[in-house]
Amino acid sequence: MTLAARWLRTEIADLEPYTPILPLEVLARRLGLPVERLVKLDANENPYGPSPAALTALTSEQHYHIYPDPGHTALRQALARYTGQPAEALVCGAGADELIDMILRLCLNPGDAVIDCQPTFGMYRFDTQVCGGRVITVPRGAAFELDLDAIEATAATSQAKVLFLTSPNNPTGNLLAPEELERLLRLPLLVVVDEAYIEFAGVGQGFAEWVARYENLVILRTFSKWAGLAGLRVGYALVSGWLAAHLWKIKQPYNVSVAAQTAALASLEDRQLLLERVARLVNERERLLPLLAEVSWLHPQPSAANFILCRVEGRSAREVKATLEQQGILVRYYHTSLLRDYIRISIGTPAQSEILLEALHHL
Image 1 (cartoon, rainbow, N blue to C red):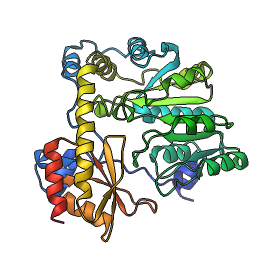
Image 2: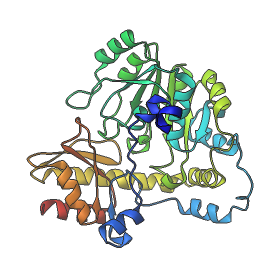
Image 3: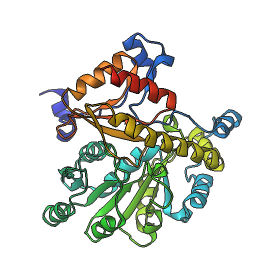
């Protein structure tokens, strides 16, 4: 008997690991290029970085030797002002990823089912399996729309506990419609709507205010995208009171670092600048979309996020990704049956877009 067979949970021993994006320094060494030559468009990061106010706050902070506030008191108060929701409805995490894990650890017994609408963010499947749950996939339609009838049928037959939705969806970029969410909230499921990219979708597109009306609704958000804090890992959930009470029970006491709380607070204070940068990225997305369509073998999909999913026709999407990488241009390719013919391009600066377009026209 191997050591793994003796001590590991079976589902962990058999788990396929999540594949994260490699850091710039590692990729630069692999490609033999300086870091500044890389055009990083593979992880939906904000090319403009953190707010200057956040960087100043990080430099000025004097208490890195003290454990952070376990209740994220100041941050939740600031988020209450930002979202218009009470601080009691807010729970913070080390990125939205930690909150996904916390929700599933709270809800799943071994073998419980979670509904996942592929293609979508891979962490829902990954964390469900880590927590000993079963993933039931309800594929999206040809235009990546939700199959509401199939979700309802699956909920009726599977006794699933949780449904994950993403708006805008990653990697397809399409929004969840209010009438779709309203219909799905009637199901006997905890409905988790991941709004990691909601700032790029425009004012009024999110569902934060719905949490007060629906006890089975959870909204996830993050500072990684709009605020340029992906490297500091800070996110938050909007939840009903019953769920908040139990999330506080299982949360690691000091899960959001002093640095992350400091930078997030400063970002909220400087949100006018950050939202102006969001507007620049949205403008660049709309400029880039028709330019990508001019590449004869590329078919970009409309997007409400800070990325564009493109179908590759007549050649291998995987080879396109690899060829661009050799030139220092990094885009995302997925080794899945649903996305085998696609690449996803994060929105960068106009200068980065021009480098990308030049390379695409010469492939």
